[in-house]
Length: 150
Picture 1 (cartoon, rainbow, N blue to C red):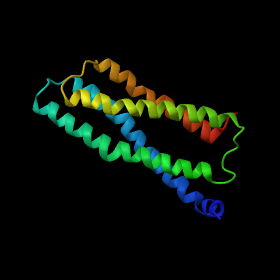
Picture 2: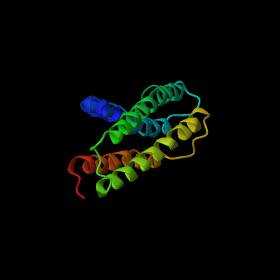
Picture 3: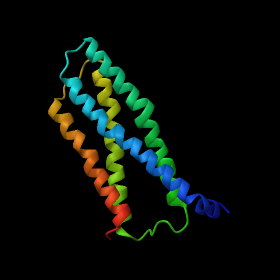
Picture 4: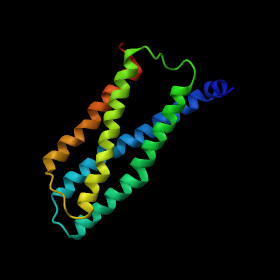
């Protein structure tokens, strides 16, 4: 019964999964970039306070809800009968990249709190490097899902 419902809803769930993933990635790309810029402004200035507000809104209103939606729709896709061949290698690589993306996401609130309390000690270079990680992980995830190379 539930399997049949998931199969009927599959195109909609897949579309919502992709849309929420795009929103999540937008936040994953932009928040570390905001941190880069935030590093370059003096603490306690109006500009620093503006970055704090932008960072909070991006994380709490876009990135976190989009991640939760991505996971919700992704789990529904995984539960849909016939969608996943559990013996295929691409699935394991995609899952590993997803775990790494989620781990990176978990660090973002901690770094945001450091900026919020004016105690960031990381350099703009650190955040520039962090800013590249979601791109690499997204590339791996998309290649695994679309090309399914193994």
